Image (cartoon, rainbow, N blue to C red; front, side):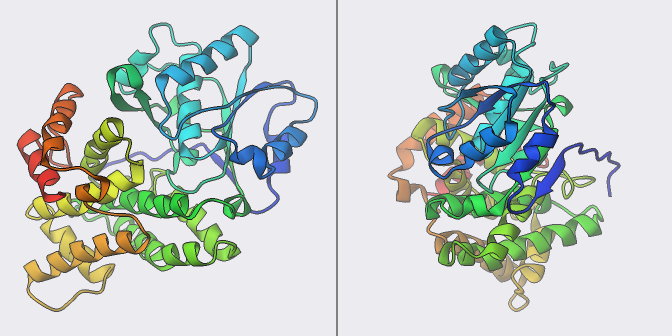
Amino acid sequence: MQNFEFHNPTKIVFGSATIPRLADLVPGDARVLILCGGASAEKNGTLAEVRTALGERLVQEFGGIEPNPTYETLMHAVEQVRREKLDFLLAVGGGSVIDGSKFVAAAVNFPADPWEILLSHGQQVASALPFGTVLTLPATGSEMNSGSVITRRATQAKLAFMSPHVFPQFSILDPTRTYTLPPQQIANGVVDAYVHIIEQYLTYPVGGMAQDRFAEGLLQTLIEIGPQALATPDDADVRANLMWVATLALNGLIGSGVPQDWATHMIGHELTVAHGIEHARTLAIVLPSLLNVQRADKRAKLLQYAARVWQITSGDEEQRIDEAINRTAQFFESLGVKTRLADYGLARAAIDPLLAQLEAHGMTAIGEHQNIDLPVSRKILEGAL
């Protein structure tokens, strides 16, 4: 196991009827900006409950943060915070709203062009406004990590940054807030969490026994509860477990001391920017093909994955690897998430522009060995046709 440090300062407040805890969690003299996305948080009463919990504090709101939060939209929020001298952010929504809030928190007092935050992948961030979250969609794990992904429409760039300054101070996780989500969003959340785990687990062995078993347990839990979350949307136990697994999938714990991949995400980001495909669905397209192309590098962990997660023990090694990859794609398909580029109307002609975007964004040596160059990315995309 590799040397590592693990630090996560986010306080989790989990369970039903926890939004009133905002009265204690947000400083009494805070000047608050609530950030949200579309109209769902208003329609289902979440925003009304948040406003009540914040009481007499000065509170303003900023809505319209997109499913893939854009730099252009978020800079309006930055301007509002600066103009109104607000000093505490509260993200009410899913991962996109939380990611956007992290950028706003880092950008308000950033001394240069805030886009440099993304270009430097967060290395230039020296401070950020404090913020908390009220999670309404289990998927990204952004509620308990220090990462964010932002899109700039003008240049078709979707870039990530991380900084220890943008951990949420707290996150309220109330599973009952997920009951009214559309099935497509729940399916996307399951896939997103699943691939987050895979990116930290399915690399090569380094003797991280606890991390491996933890990751495998989370994967098996998603396989079990994913279909249930769609079939019984008001099952409290299922939704609670889904919300908690999605948080644990990317709070830094299972990735500590082990190599990580993230090439599926990097290639998937370009599909979202170029073609508007939802983030989780790009992951479902890319991952099975990537595992197939990278099977030599990932051989030992693919066999472990086959045996421990899918209980595949018969057949020769190549057959077991094939079956594990096929079962992964079938799981995504069983949730209604398609796994081929053709399912989204894309053919071979789409590949060269995607490779050009990868090159433009410096994604020419990705994966746990940094050996996924543009020719390998081409093979992955061709395998996903």
